[in-house]
Amino acid sequence: MKLRISHPVYDWILSALFLAAFPAIVLVSLNYPNVILQQGTAHRIFYFHVPVAWVALYGPLFSLCFAVIYLIKKESKWDLLSLAANQVSILFATGVIFSGRIWAYSAWGVAWDKTDARLQSFTVLFISLIAYFVFRILITDVSKKKIFSAFLSILCAVNAVITWGAIRWMDNPGNHPESVLGKGGMDSDIRISFWLGVLAYHILFLVLFRFVYRLAKIADLKENLPEREE
Image (cartoon, helix red, strand yellow):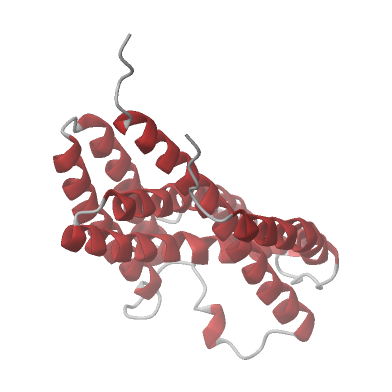
């Protein structure tokens, strides 16, 4: 039996874009823009940390959309799409946690600022994503697992929105800078490298999302295949 999970043309296009653009953009961010004098070479983490953080916040929103559709249609496809979005999100969130600590220690002299609203809200988001997978493992009933996962996806999305607004809607006593979009003073070399990084890590997100969804779909198909009679 031959099963087509998705059209291979999309995979070839995304893979070609990723292989052509991603290494080049990483090299550009490491060599092209000037560093900020107060931070030195550690400033180059900015071109990884911020784009990855954006994707880590977008992922739960995609998962939210898929989860809501699942609650309406009760089709496994949407549960798997929601699962894939959260899997990629937690991967990117892990990158944010570690790169943020390195950058914070270099820029602020402390790896974990307990007074920083963005840091604390992102930590809550990270814990929410972990809880999503813990409950998905612990709940054995398939129907309940999918429904419970959908509501947890909604919770993760709410936390993502709160994290996004942490430095916009409240007075932040911590060291975290304001939104980069709210600053009009980025030099052209920094601005170009930043937006190229945003493009590159969004392409990476799409590549990983399709790959993870494919694995989830295959696992789901294997579980639902009828047992062969001997």
